[in-house]
Length: 267
Image (cartoon, rainbow, N blue to C red; front, side):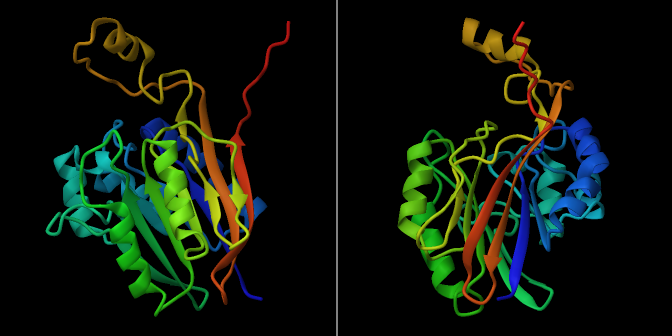
């Protein structure tokens, strides 16, 4: 068996979080020795999108692919980077003609692996169906490689779990992103798909999902638009590490990562 080892790092929020990740990534490389590093980067540039300077830094520290979501279109320079860098993905199920690339096939240590990004529709923009779009993508891709990794960027837990049930055994991994809250339901299904509902946020936890708390609270108090700013304190890394049998495309190991742990004051 030839094993493909993958480190998937969850939604990176803000430049300070990028710097923190850069300072720690070598420790993760030593511990896990990944063949492939995937980072969801849709919030890295001041909380919205991924501009070229930040994307380049992520590739410099070892990322092979950057995935995205609805916020990759929030900055003009992020859209420009989407057009320029094929390894920076936006959801594949945006309508035909949308700028950017939603899928890629890489060769890692003579192993072909496909990575694709899809976006849910519950409580989000009503774009093309992620199920039907993914179905077509998988039908085309299995002719090339059985190793298929999907970032499913979605709000609703039920939609993510339905996506797993529909594609169980047909892809190597379905990693949920978007909510910025790590779930504790990582698993390998009996059919060989690695799954977690949400990998969580790599960012500042003294916040409301990465943003300064005051503006988030005022949004709920007054129901008026607020100017959001990225928080900066208590940065943590959320990720999953999983292993795939590259000859069959079946996953056989998954580990949830949260670093550093929360400190529980029992006094």
